[in-house]
Length: 403
Ligand code: ASP
Ligand code: MG
Image 1 (cartoon, rainbow, N blue to C red):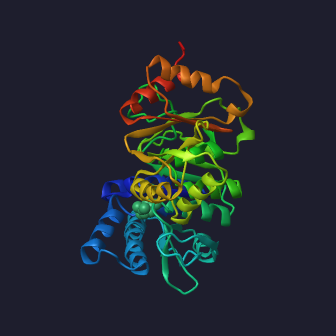
Image 2: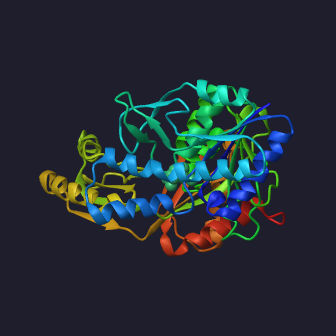
Image 3: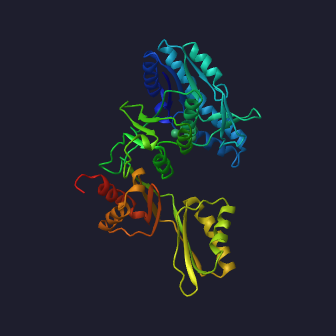
């Protein structure tokens, strides 16, 4: 079998952890498999490099940032190769470009265009364990690029796709994907399987186990992923296509506190105003999430929407200008809100899921301020101070046996 194993920053953070990874990888190799290992930079290395750059230049060029950031993965890859060699097993580390990663030239957020794994194959044929620097590639101008934060998950999936790997394992510091944050919710349980679409929703909702793009790519090329811990080696969570399994009514509850609500009050009730309003935001590249419009009364209506917290000030400024241009009454911003969502592939064919979620919030006396739904997700906006209580109440409603 050809197995791709990716290890995140915490799994390779020091010599002891590297030795642990070397044991995992060599065990698989000794079982007669070909192994390609993808590594992230050790621990906080990438953050530290970004801080170093900021000390020198507060607006560093993106090309030079990529040159700098790519060095982090080179450290962990070469150290891991040495660690495996020390165990008497042949290993070689390759940079992203040696491994054949061709990317767009959008420095610091490049997209993978093609992976040509000739060199990887050659090294595997010589019975070596191949270690590839995640997160990096080469543009067509022969410049080093990086794939954006958390990009080494995507590197691993891209190699698995290009080489038709039999298995792609993503090792991290949690044992898998849980029904809620296990540090906060006491009965949170590890999921055996989750669909790509649910995982994508949870990734955007801040579950933070897998990078979004890696899940999109896994879905596109139908690569099954296993998310598991490098420390316990317990079976993890398999991410795969939904139709291969029982669709869970609700797979998980997620909390997102990186959200703010902007309301434009007293908008004249005329056609075209919503269109113009949201065009102004998209022109500034501000992503809008939940939108709520009140019923028109006395010729005016209110329009509220949510954005990421770091966009709140800019969105409000854009809306202030717009409000005065169209004669709306005022613009209100609330940054003390949180979005709580439930995700489940089985929801589209079952009634009553939303009711159950709202009942849990009612039981906990938590006020809902906005609601948004999609086929596999229901989100509510609530006060930030109620966020943890809301997650617990909803989780217990759906997952505790006595409910
Ligand atoms: N080292 C990079 C980062 O910290 C890439 C990764 O970890 O996936 O974002
Ligand atoms: Mg990561």
